Length: 617
Image 1 (cartoon, helix red, strand yellow):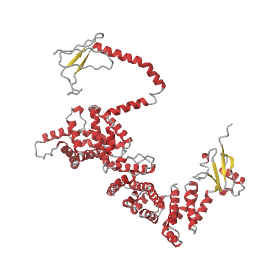
Image 2 (tube, rainbow, N blue to C red; image 1 turned 90 degrees about the vertical axis):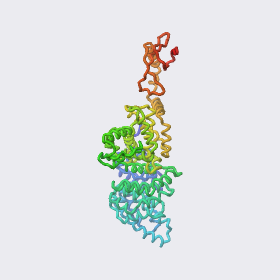
Image 3 (cartoon, rainbow, N blue to C red; image 1 turned 120 degrees about the horizontal axis):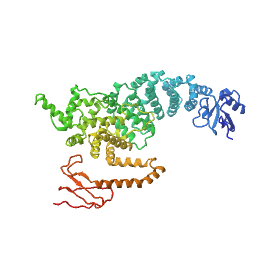
Image 4 (cartoon, one colour; image 1 turned 120 degrees about the vertical axis):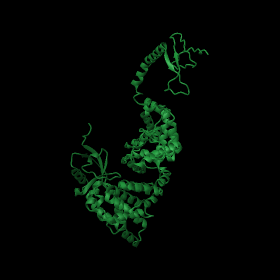
């Protein structure tokens, strides 16, 4: 018979004694269980004792978490959180540096437990630690007088900051309570060129938490820390320091007022942050851990979010400066100069502009500015088009002229495509959204170029034009083409290319034909298609289906049909000048042809024998 669900069998340890096996009734109060354990070892004052999980965490057992105890767990009888907090509070104030160091080490370990943290904070422990940090120079002078090594002082400060970080992580104390002197001291540890690694790591963690948890502290930290002072920490080899440094930069970026973010981005560009991260972090021989990947992802998102303002800005059709950008696109594409107002009649100029804007693929041929009033993507689409025209002029001219020479319904409209593609890329990269707390999806290729989004667009617009041709699309197929292009981009991004050139190369291997093969393969590999009932049904009905196909094709041959001639110079959608009539008898398969100088072609999926007679000359 299984034991009751409320009974848990555990082993309990006590220093200097053999572990005790006992059954804990989860219905009984925890204080009663502790009293029973103390009496078993003849220990008085059971209220001064508590139970802990006997593992690396040493978390206290409380009424809230006692249900987490499983059968076979090993517990430890120890002093209560309050008694431990009182003892450590006294020990860290010892005049002996060795005793102080051991006490701070124990405090840093114990502070991870929220039960202990609450008791220590109630003793005004946070204030005690901040006073120790603020008086760090005096402590250092005492260490020198007592001939204590700098290494010991570094350990002393390191454990002090570690305990502080662990206590603050529980969210019991508000960050707004700290003085400017404390902030200056922490910032001073970060700004020093030579500092103990552990102290630097904890100091960076404290600055990040200050910025993220208090808008007031953000302004104070921003006054003490500059990007130029953080950059050297990225040029080292310690990935933990690099991670915390990028975390501080991200925090400053995230909490900066909107009007200051563009200025901060400009400073980051001046300090060549992107190239430093690329050289010292992404291309470092040390593998990137999950925390670093998350911080790089956050930086990537925050960088792309700078585009949100342009993405959500409508074009003003009356703004001459914005209209001049469209004129520039026309000039570069067709190598024409904007005619002066007195050159030719107004109607003639309007007609010429309308013709060129139609070739450029705008929806509104008369006033293309109206196309950019849709948000998103707003003015960001026009920015991308201008970037392509100026920095990849050959590709831009080739796309425009190639499509303007096609039939109207077969042309890939550059203007409309650019607008929809920009909107799609913003959705893929989640422009305007806050970074996720658990995401590690950063792309190395976006750290290889200062204008990575614009370059990304230039590659994708050429892909769109290529896919349009491969699909032999018409204007009615626009949405279908965009769906295929989105799939091509997403599949290429999944491969995490290291550079934009590598991304472009991956897209070359993802043609429309390859996408169709992948889709078919994925459909066939789905569990539903490979299940036993589906396979049995397919095997059962296949002969009947094949016979039905055969009969339908025979009936089609008996009736005869009318085919249009498709030459190598003529597209399928064009109307042929001649038609070929093929009449086939069911038994003799005699082929008859009207008077035409063109040879008929008949393609049949099934192996029918066709008798062919050359037309008379």
